[in-house]
Image (cartoon, rainbow, N blue to C red; front, side, top):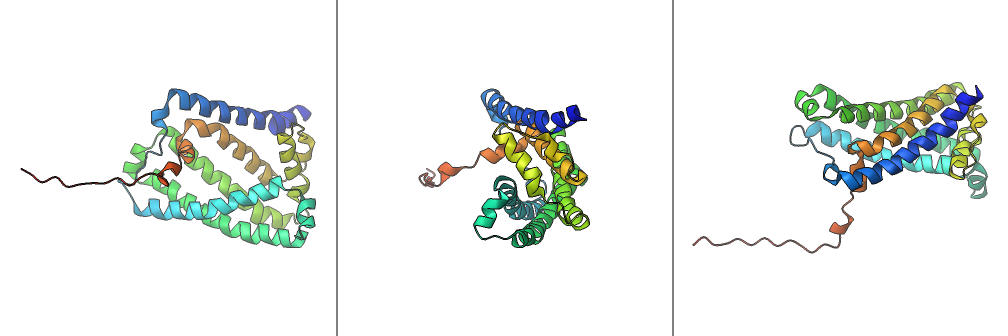
Length: 228
């Protein structure tokens, strides 16, 4: 059992992050022209706009919640005046609200990609896998937040998952911390790392192509030429 734990909670996360970094470098150096979102907006726009809007509205607070919950020790939050009860209320109700918004957005986007024939034909196998995996990750996160926490109210992920997660970054991971973590949280964590391993080989790379240079770019002037 210890060997399995070491693989799941030490080797697998590190392997995923190595693939994430090396894969991005390799793709950027060898295949820059595919570094695109390959939009299907011209095929179907209504569901894409709604699903994308809901997903992006929800995912940013969800990511910030993960950063605080996993990266900031509970003692630091207490020192800043955030009690355990207040933190729990924010995590469950605030996180639950934005999680539901994210889930609805992913449901719309995934359904659109699979059910609209023209969109599905434009989609690659990696597009379908990424959509499905993202939907599953969000669903498991919501299940863990709303249902597992209700069934096991005494479980505090900041005493187990958060400490294990921070241990990965200081190169002192303790797999035993994940031993008694509920299955839903385990699945959410493993699939979360798995998406990082898939990331460099999918259209998710377009996340890094934020056109910040457009802010300071000069206006493009268009002049009408008189016909002779």
